[in-house]
Amino acid sequence: MSATDSNTEGPHPGSELNAANPAQIAADFETVSGTPESRNPQDTPAGHSRMVIVDPANPSTEVLREAAEVIRRGGLVAFPTETVYGLGAHALDVDATSRVFSVKGRPSTDPLIVHVVSVEQARKLTRTWDDRAEQLAQRFWPGPLTMVLPKGNVVPDDITAGRDTVAIRIPAHPIALGLLRESGVAIAAPSANRFGRISPTSAGDVAEELAGGYDLLLDGGPTLVGVESTVIDLTGDTAVVLRPGGVTVEDLESVIGKIVVLKRQSHAEDRDALAPGQFLRHYSPSTPLVAMDAPASVMDALAQRLRADGVTVGLIELPQRPADAARVLYSRLRAHDGTADLLIIRTMADGGIGDAVNDRIFRAAQGNVISSASDEVTGRLLNLIGR
Ligand code: TXA
Ligand code: MG
Image (tube, rainbow, N blue to C red; front, side, top):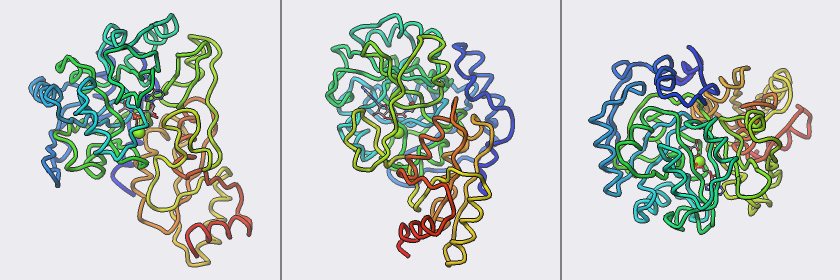
């Protein structure tokens, strides 16, 4: 299959990335990513987008300063975090953040996450910072946890989509941290993909999605966690997980006690639902995709029936270990996109980071979950692809 599958090899610190220890973060990246020389430089095709290869474990200060300057001047820099690549802009510069919305094709009603380099900087963006925020920050930052908190006055309404809350995180990636440190400003960064599409886990993915839309792309190799940060809303008395992600619900509960996990919508009609970013169609390939919630043998049987009807079927089987599945999910979806009439991907056991993987699978499949190879299911799928 694709070169991206080499992601499955080597050590995988993934979900253990929570340690708020810069040396450990750098070491994690050293073990997983190749040296800069081992990857091929490539020119970004369209527009004025430039790409620079950066050592993820030990990024060049010179490059970070140059990127920081682009941010401070209102430009857009795409950069790796431990989860996925982000499209970054000066968070308090409304012209810059409005470009982020337009480059992504993102509706102005869907707010952006703000990245910061320290708890102190996070607090300055909020109106209140309670014990839960403090405890979670101490335990999981830098790391794949985004906290939604009452917004401070300095935060423009545009990035929060008019909400009175702001989503903040400290990413655990030497390049992201270096960029934040050198720029001295908070950086708003959604995932660097077009709206509704598969999130990017490599610089090549970013170029494929957005070439011409950013000024600079920092290529720090493949990302480690592979799915986005967990988003937790701390604005009410009960903490609510809005999006499962790199930090597990179990880990969060071990710090602040019982939390509520927002239920996945099961129907396309629910798309105006409560929380922003809960769109059913999300993380989606262009080829129709369905999720198989049954053993591999059922998936194979179904594929056989469909193939007998002349349908080309791409089967996506993820690694068993949840952290490995998370790391390769998006690259597998991307590699299979456009290669068949229909893609079928198998869900995995719930729990831990498996929850995040299943959430993304469900949305990528736009809620189309099947569990048998029956006549009814076969018929439905033929209908789905217009046969
Ligand atoms: O791992 C990540 O979080 C990546 C990397 C780049 O940091 N970023 C990311 O951003 O996934 P984005 O924009 O693709 O997803 C942010 C999610 C969206 O679902 C958005 O609706 C939600 O966070 N969000 C942002 N601000 C919010 C707020 N004030 N209240 C509720 N949800 C919010
Ligand atoms: Mg996104």
